[in-house]
View 1 (cartoon, rainbow, N blue to C red):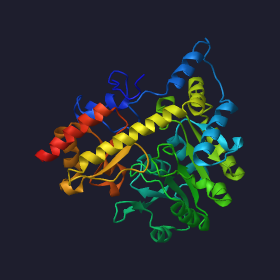
View 2: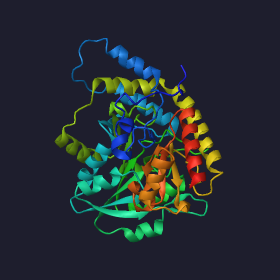
View 3: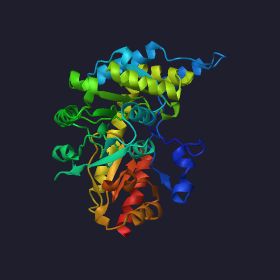
View 4: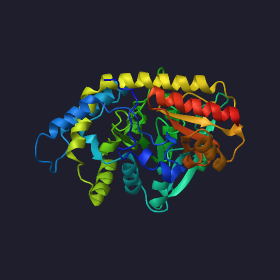
Length: 388
């Protein structure tokens, strides 16, 4: 089976296709915005689900310990982070976990640090839960690499600052935070008793020579101060199963978090999700390696094509399958930039401004697609840039 052939998802109720007309005013625009892959989910996952469906009863189930243990082994093998079974619990999504953690570890009116730009639900989960945003702008250095400003961060903290939301690896800028960067960030949080909620959903989509480091793995103090959010959705293209996990080593924090989960009563998830989860972590290692090789080739293709166009700056992401395109040299406003990509290039991308003020003038392109789709997209973009 050619895992990287073109797969027509337009009739499958896929979000990125179903919402094309509503979002972009066109049914023909190439949708490259939602962060899932147009690549077949691992065969072992499909087969495991098919086998489970041979049993005629699909009732309530809980996640097996063996499913959690499969993820624990994967995380230890790939990231050197040794997790105990009692630290892990089920969640329907990372975003749901963020909201739950915000309510568990802060009060209405407390402040939460969010780094700009970042995945939009970081902002909405803070606001919708009645907390105050502290926006910490990530800044690019001379090489275009985004950095924390630790001195600025210290100056932004007040007695009401209770939480920091960390995106690691970072969506949309594609950074893999280094040991030293995470250590410095963790030190500030420990000094001020700020809990860290670390979204590590993209941790397995990392390009050599970079290596993901779970911030909770850096020290015992950070382990006790961090809530780590993980899942198979990005790694194995399984977002449709709505399953992730929450890792909390601290008994105190885990008790507070569990109390909030009990109020929500989101249960233990769905039987087919449990089966898919365990199968992916146990059996999809080879699939993951092949997908990473494909994404590496696609990333290189974008770099090669955009090298010929000085008006879009592309720094290869260290992680994720998301290209963060710096379009500021085109001299367009954000609405004009969006229209340019839709009507001139025929592409439906995520506008940078949706990731925060620091995203103004940028566009995010999902390159987890077939080679043919990416080639066609870049050909259309190149033509639009030449005609601009």
